[in-house]
Image (tube, rainbow, N blue to C red; front, top):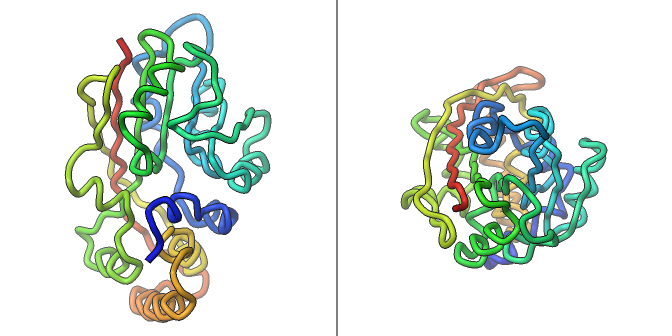
Length: 249
């Protein structure tokens, strides 16, 4: 089995699959994370860290923020630039941000904080945030209260994010205090192609041995037949988006 580090750096090899298979974030969730820093005369400056192909970047731009995108994988950032024009991109990590001190109003991480060393990542976010700035963390988690979705997870294997969040809320460290939390329930219409892309974009499948990956895909095909995801027919995949925020003193 691949290590957590290998998994965390695996997505670039499937960057286009990630882009087509992964959902975006509800605009309400991103707006909620940014609420502590909106309302001034100037637009807010946001660092999307672990930006990937820009799913969270797009929502922040839509809300009027000036965004810089940071990710450890240049292949992911290349796909981001194809879909989100005019956003500066930088190779870096949450633990080593290529940004000046006190240079942004918000540091956001979508589907990423579970890969981060909480103490080092919190310290770096605190360094680049202005006083009163916000650290926002968000995850899209499939709603496994729905039986076929629970079967989907069993076939694909639970992700590192799902395992971490099952144990409770994420951890942050100084200079941040207690996290506020909110959640939203919604559904994403998906056909067979996008369901397969979602599965293939997950670190477990990307790093699996070829025989294991093939066996998983056979089981996925069987499940998709059973739920009626045939051809272009659409099924609704239910999600719970969990968001957290903490303001820098």
